[in-house]
Image (cartoon, rainbow, N blue to C red; front, side, top):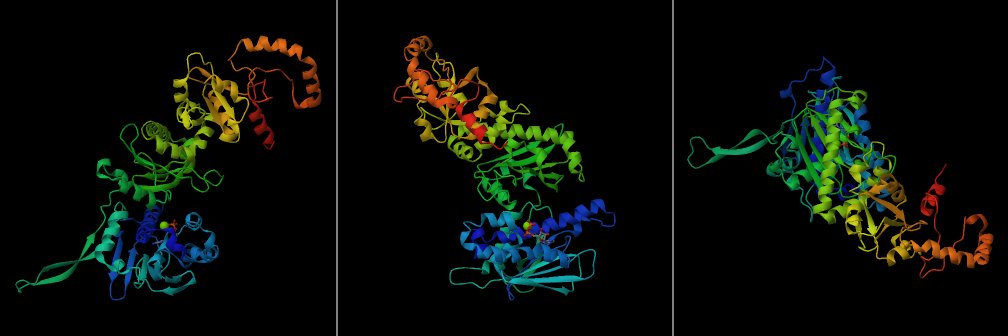
Length: 543
Ligand code: ADP
Ligand code: MG
């Protein structure tokens, strides 16, 4: 079944339901800020888990915002409905990746462990509660029901064990407790559970009796407020998945705690693989923004420059107002400071990975290098300085991706320019006659295989005082005697050249004798500012 393929670990259903409950309480809290008739007494808000072994149920109750009948139809029904569509296409789905993006399978993950899910809920606005019930893909029912308090109960009827699958663990106290600890420890509201204890039986020597005691399972300290050295890589990875930042394993996390002109905590991730919609208009960059621990925005775009739009994560600051609007945020000085700081952190971390973990960087660059080059190209804020040391190109001599700095360091003294050759692929460029002269001199050539490459390089213009020069350029700055010598031969072969020019008419501007060819009879060269490759790209662009 689709649901099972999405998450490899079934246990995360609990993380999903707890995070929904926490969201629901957040919503009440948020409402209270703007509506004086709603009061938020912190001690009244919690999440409670109960196990009923005899009936094989696990119940999750929250004191959050609740759901009306319409809410249930809209929010819980969606997946069951669109789910049928998804099931039809099941065979085309590779890893369920797109499904999560499209339908947000959070709540639905309950069906990984439950054969039946009942949602009992009531909102502040009405005395009437409603009961939603479903067995999964086949749809659901909703009917009026009695519920004393505002909030939501989610009752999971846990599946029976099968030959190869064990479900009993989800009605075991210790197991549920450990799943909460693992994934939901930082949830801001108490997650309560009745835990069975035993004590010596009164009056009877050597005998014990069991009793139940309510405990708060989570530590309630958000991960970003914790000390870095208390946290393991796994903690950061769990937070990444719990937040649905991505379905990959991030290659790096950056944990920032700043106390200064502006104070904030932030956890940032550099993902490994490209989100399926990354290079499309649909992709939205941004970081989660919290004000004193309360989520106020899902994707705050102002916190990330476009060229680092792949970064995921969150920022929590006490210096931001809770009901700050998007418009105000754009001009907020504090936020600008945070954004600038974050940008530098990301840049430095990338530089770090590049220097110390080259293989990791290669993988990262393979996914997001193009975005960095776009950043160089669209250099409004003059940020090419930030990026030019992070971009790489394939090298003719090293046969791998190299940085501009590495290239320049290897340049022989007499080499004037940083040479590059543009083409569709490495194989194609390798066959270009224009590369011969430069390669024969023993000079390294950078291969530009991406449309954006040459445009980006034009923006950089000079790197460490070296200009860039296309191998197809008329002046390669290599043999000075080339010009005069070829001037003679040019005269001698005038008749031939003229007739060639005649045949090619306006396809070329001139036909010249060249000394740079070795194994090829002819090649194209450019004279003006635009290289042949750039011309091709510009001509193929819609006007
Ligand atoms: P997401 O949390 O990403 O929105 P889910 O599938 O986890 O997606 O949940 C779908 C929606 O159902 C939520 O957005 C919310 O509106 C509603 N919902 C789920 N659980 C609760 C709950 N405990 N209380 C109130 N609303 C809930
Ligand atoms: Mg959810």
